Image (cartoon, rainbow, N blue to C red; front, top):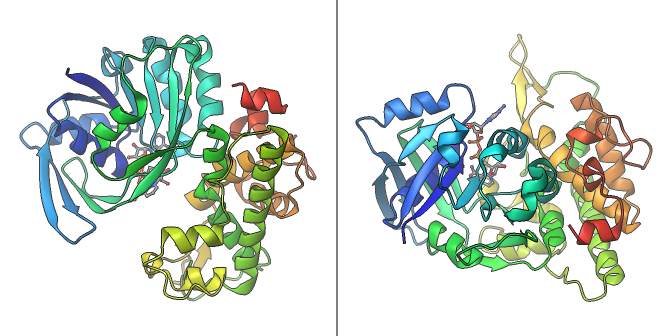
Length: 400
Ligand code: NAI
């Protein structure tokens, strides 16, 4: 059978998935991009050309794939028509716009996949789809399957590496009857790598999100900063000091304590995939990290992080100041740390380190999520905690 899928987005990941999926014979691929004039520009660029991916496989082999999606549009009616599966491949702050635009056109028995979902994806999707949510299945992958970047917008994208495996959870709506199996179908679309690992509990995927990494490192570096511009952009990972590593480790401890408490409160619920960030580095980057003696050293000696610097903007005299609007805060706090905090609050677990970091970051974002140690700030609705959608109890959390 030929299956019709929709890819939402126009960035690195959306280019990759569009080209990969369109190259498969049994898939008909639509693309919906709502950002600026991306749809128009992309359509024009592909009039006489195919979309090209240059792939470097993990064994060093290289290949090129040429293909073309059927339509690229900003019109949701056209994009959604006849589609079985919708992939959202945009940063988390852009998800809401796609939910709003697509919902009127969604047919029952659609699979909606967050690639990646990022923390709070299911809460937001359920809430924004309204009555239609129960007729859909909502899946979330823990990250993007590839390290990838656009070389030339609309025309050429590069895959620098495939993840070996990737966790995915899904919530089947009470009135949803998909005509295809979720895991096998998503796997077929992605290809052989990464191997999808099903995670039974969607809360575990939320607590596994790697959005916990950037905010403590930023707070550790800039929390006491006096505002004086610095002569160069500091290294983000290779420059990690004891205090930053300790902050990250404590955030991870608090997330882990939340997972353990939930497992206790919901007898039998499996949270075993939620592991400490130091353990995660040792497993996930086992070949890239040369010194595994501490979390600090693991981060400082991770080859995958070579040369990455703090997000900075330059001043008139050629110096630098931190850019607190960058995704490391604007995505990773409202769509990351605040979600973990919300789950911890419901589990009754105290999170002093997470609270301190959110309190600092929200000032930089000019928002108020947390007041003291409670998520009762006036801007909580613009984040993705369970509380942002009126979920306040363990039962509400688990019976979504
Ligand atoms: P990207 O930065 O390439 O996304 C940019 C696209 O997002 C734009 O082309 C536009 O379509 C949309 N967009 C941007 N600003 C928007 C706005 N204000 N309103 C509406 N739409 C807007 O993102 P990328 O690299 O594709 O990543 C997608 C997700 O995957 C992110 O959450 C990222 O953190 C994650 N990720 C990316 C990796 C990579 O190698 N690129 C690796 C691992 C995770």
